[in-house]
Length: 380
Image (cartoon, rainbow, N blue to C red; front, side, top):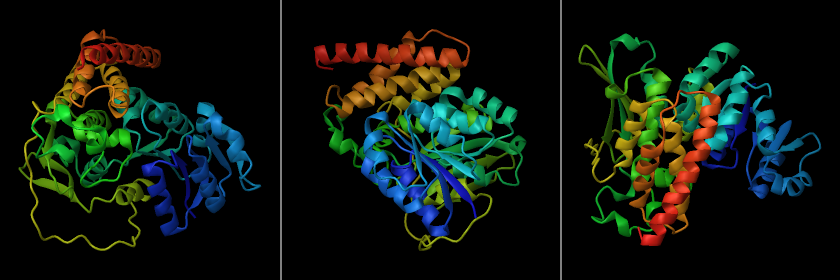
């Protein structure tokens, strides 16, 4: 029986991963969560893992309700302890920079990581691959686009690839309003196709999520940034395409249901049957150019990748702070890329090391908070 550990078990990707576990009757070795005590307790009661972790603030509440065979740890080190458990696959789905340390713990323990935490690859790609090689670990991407690229590369040589193409839904503001400065957090959270957490949903609305995916593609597959294309595909059925030097194009197509790339991350290259209806192939499928002037965050991600070093880490940290401020009503939607650009402008060039990532992340967050305070004072 396949054994799975889920990091970020109470989040959107984590809960969908546990649906896949239910489909196939897999055993759960460990669960790492944050502050959702009730859901974590329910998951532990159902799957009876050996170990669970949670935020220290809810540890006493969770501990009272765990099955006798389930042990509790807490805090960042607790997540890392769960990540190191023996398991066939470890789903790394703790969002943001908080997911980097547990992801690395799983890799250094030699686990096969199903990577749903794109920030780990964005801010530390070369170092992450170095750790994978040293620990003889393995890594399979879970994002629908990167899973699509990974599947489309099966049996192919990277030498034959001339471009990788990521699709984006366009988010809730593809067709308006004209003035994005007036949109509210509630409007930005209404994604037309995907069910995701608030941070990723806002990033999808600004197209910054696609920028992160461009950087992830760059580091995952070792392909130059200039060979990574983005097209808007509102139907979200074509997840990725690959151009080959003979003019051929391969595409990975499927319903906009994250359980399918999650399952491939947990089982690939095996393809167990799923209890879902087949995707109809009729209807209209659009492919459009992204409006980079209207959504400048996409271009900023390319710029950070071109600079290299710690620039992607600075951009990612700035976005976490800016999205948090937008959701709290402290800045406008159009202020998010302003914060990103200013932080990127102020970030000194530095080679990529673990200590440089930590220092840059902390400094970029401070810079972003100062910029946000200035924007708030002048009303954006």
